[in-house]
Length: 373
Image 1 (cartoon, rainbow, N blue to C red):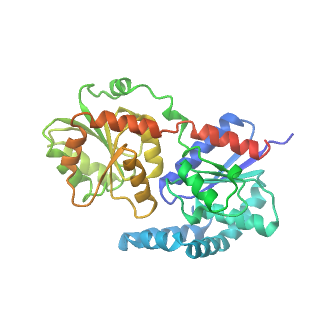
Image 2: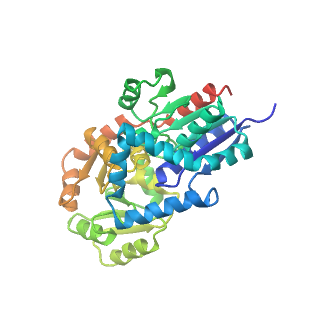
Image 3: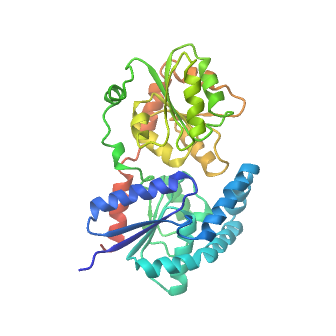
């Protein structure tokens, strides 16, 4: 019998969609080792120059008009706007999926971004196809751009989202509130003390992990200046990603700081660093929040992109796992408040209550069953 072919479509608009696709692919390889699994970035230049150009123009526009995403999000949140947006992108991107479908002949398609989800939905409708389609949402709130016809299995973060889709007429048996998929590596990490020993961090120190591009708040240097106001000596772990300038700024600042500052560029150690930290300071990306939940790491959230990241911040703070630093509020004071009394342990408990570490395993099991594998 020929090996089953599984096509995962994602989009490099923010890292969360990619990380969710990687987590699903990783679990598929465990549960279906003989399957041919292909993951495609729907917005990569190698996939389509026009898709890539659309993404590039959009990201450049965000640099000049930061509220553009909020405008788009609000317009597409209405039933009419959402439908128009979906149809427009699906029609534009349909030729690319026609090519991918002909090339890979998948037995099953999984999407972790609304653009490919809407495109495959349109393709199924036009071809009267029963190709199994699963959509894995990567936010903590519902948005019409995710909602399409012809989806056999929907996966969402919370039961509230599931009930919201049922209220909109989606069949309950196709909706699964299993959480957002994260890498199984999170489950296998050693306890915090062991991680600190491995990283050479004193067990008695307070440890803060700083993640994200500019980290908001005026950039990494200003963030570190704020933390310098805290008299207690801290260990600050700075992950700069591929931003070499950001890493250099942190390294320069470390020379005169009374804190211990260690820096990383692009690294696969993020989960270990998160597990070793007492507090994570970051933008509220859904995958980052989901990993922090699973590790029981309290969060100080800042500068959400208007729209889904705002909803992510609302979810994490409403459940007591995070503090949302609003414009004008002082970072140093917020950190000291979190470190005071029982706040940190309470936030840790609440984070673990929201954790869905088995999401990937459950999602993949349902997808394979629905596809008849």
